[in-house]
Image (cartoon, rainbow, N blue to C red; front, side, top):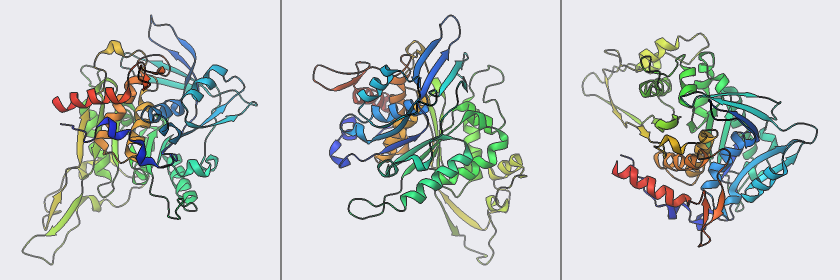
Length: 416
């Protein structure tokens, strides 16, 4: 049973964060969305969107002023970028780096959904890629980085960020602390052909977060129950077990976003090997080590099959104490489908909040709970939620205080 340990008021205690240097940076474009729904819902045009926008929203929901300036992102405004959307972004009071690019159109994407909220997406105009070289020293010093990209590009970004950060120090002359890297794979490269690249990326990041469909894509599966056509939670759990088993000595977390079913958290535990009494001179390798490093021609099915079991005698001369790690479902905040008006951006918002929570010292389970709450605000309407203030001057989104909604969700989890 999930029981977050800290109160919402503790999370928003601004005295902990000094001069509000960036806590978060998102490597993703901000663009205009055209959204098509199943009939009879009419389509929407020129909706501010993109992973960059919604991820920044998730971080911003957990960062009321003055913490709002700790949310860093880059907005490349093409010649057609609406003034109203500039005003909207500025109202969030983040550390957005607004760059005028009048020689191009703003990146625009098409979004479509099926009955299971699986998203179809493609670009309608060329996107503008953000690189490590685009970051100012302030943004480079962020305590968490959220990357929406392919496996190989994620490797490139992590190495580039680490290389550039090595030349920076804190105001008191110390090295920058290790940041949190959250990787969100792009859907079109979640295929069996990219599985090797995926497993080679996992040791470089702290969190890998595909949605259920993307995770299934890596494994060559549909991710659906063959009898009902619904999302298969067993498929999610099995795929996570296989990925964790393929990297048994690495420390990373899988956070799989599963729409209305919430999210599934999986993380390897620690391992401690001790000698058994008797025959102390004989030591055999554990089964995971017999496979060697992953190669392009590796039989992944055979590899996973071997890693999920210990063949008799392989570790017979050792005792292994195992920390079970994390295997847990965290529900979605909204249980009533009527509350979900548009799921676009919900996953990005979830991860923006999760990355900020991790950067501020929260554990994975509590960070996921904050992410679920943040996502709930993103999907209640088309486009971002409405920012306002209550009668006491407290910040609200859709007329609700974020910490109040978290307290409600925390109590629900504790009693469930």
